[in-house]
Amino acid sequence: MKTVEWRAAGDRSRGPIPQRERAVAVGCRYRDGQWWFWYVRTDVPIGPVGELNTAARRVRANVERTVS
Image (tube, rainbow, N blue to C red; front, side, top):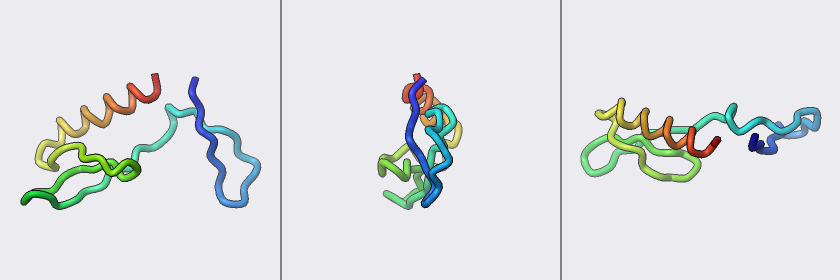
C-alpha cells in the first residue's frame, strides 16, 4: 500500500495516511464561456461542469489509477 506522509502543523503524533484515504481537491473555473472542474493541486482541467457524470468518472478513474 502506498502512503503519503502528512502531519498537521506542530503535530508529531500522526503517522502516514494511506493514499487511498487521501482527498481530491476539485475546484471550478470559468473558461471559454463555461464553468469547468479543475484539479486544485495540479491545476489540470477535468471537464465542463455541465457534464458532471463524465467529470466524476474521470476523477474516480484518476484516483483509482493513482492508488493502485
